[in-house]
Length: 368
Image (tube, rainbow, N blue to C red; front, side, top):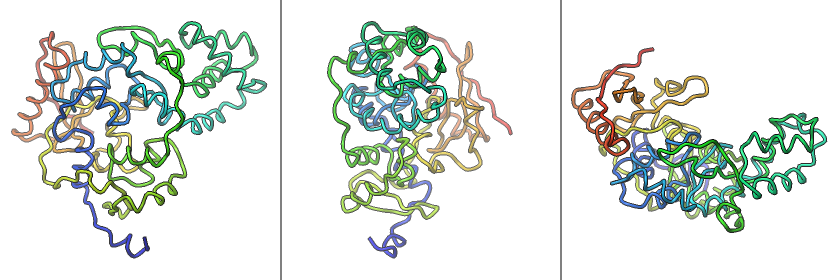
């Protein structure tokens, strides 16, 4: 495509871009599908903590209950491991065995930050030894660290465990990750836990198409942010004949699937309660499609993300559960109609996730 053609591509305004992404993310209207299918469609769910994937699905699926995710996790059809951006995600078994190889180059680069602490360590031998240890019996990070220190006593202890995590696809075994259950992080390999060998990494072309289906329209930089990978421009160029292009509000070129939903920008977007680290907020370089510029940075305190509230398709506040109440803290004053809709969605979320509890709903305002 010529430069002139690119600059005359249709423009998607912020609302149109946001509505398109919300539709892909199942946040304009709840979908009727199994939780496992939703995890695959969304290319995984951010899962640094145990509860976020459950809240994420409650916001997206009709009739969801926590057992809908706990059961396939207990049955080893979904699992938790480090993939994109070196963060823990909940993935289907198939994606555990394929997406991790796809991002292995990024994990290898990450190890470069620990070069000094790994001086004298044979990383190939470390991978073999760590695999033998966790496949013999699942280990905590502390147990794995002590075993590796016995082999390399002069190495930095943290660097050794980072090396094991980067070189191997380590799954957090259950009961960790199950709703209403507790358990420390205990690890084994994805292949051992899922009972089958790793699969070849999928073609990057296929992953780009999956990303656009779940997060598009998007720029090359957006996907690189999501995947934690670089140098994807050539992949998008190769796919260009199969895609449509737009320009975003800032003039950036956006790619999309021809038949993907791009709703009218005035399509109603009901309130949604999203967990901390929700994929919607972390999967684009430019997040203004859902985060108004005036609220940038307000969903984080240092390195800790807050649970966020969407109103009219945009981040509009925070929420939390106190001892006896769902506390909604809006960034700006809500209209009476918006408060009523937020309260109704809150009651629905509480009935889904905490049917045994008697929470009230309390409104406040985040200032500053």
